[in-house]
Image (cartoon, rainbow, N blue to C red; front, side):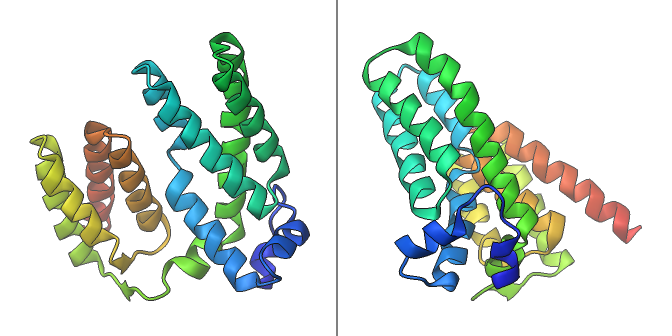
Amino acid sequence: MNEALDRLSCFDTEDGLKRLGGSREFMVELLYHFILEFSAAADEYERLMEEGKRDPAIRLIHSVKGAAGNLGAKQLQASASALEEDLKRKDLAGAERLFVLFAGDLKEALEDIRRSGIEDLWGGRGKSPGDEALLMGLLSQFKAYAEAGQMKSARKIVRDLELYHWPDEAGRTVDAIRSLMKCYKIKDAAQAADQLLEELVGDVI
């Protein structure tokens, strides 16, 4: 656990630990949930703004800012704060420019967590390991529902996928599918599932 935190470069772990009462385990847990909650935040923000939903977009950026601050991601916290202020002032041109910086900082923070190994360290806690046959079955069901546009049924399969710990790339693809579904990108989620299925079938052959 200490090694994973020491690998982080975008997070001031000393500052984050002070805010969290010194608990390294709690910090690792929050970093893991940061990925789960905000992996698709940039895409979700763009969708909200395209739909003219400025207030929900402000709330999303505010949530990222708060989480980044608690974890010591000072650069991301600063870009999120600046973007939030421009949105509140209805300076949409300024917000558009600041979003580029925010999206870059968010991407860097997410990649930093992934490189640290925290996903593997925390992601499997309390979950049963999933095998390849189970994964292929669930992905096939998800793909069928997603391609048919059956959002409710597709989401149920995503919840089933989240009950298990999937290794390496499979786990990251499942996280990506969950994030895409959160942004209502059901076709993209179906494509991600199809790509992983092809890889799994190739491994079997």
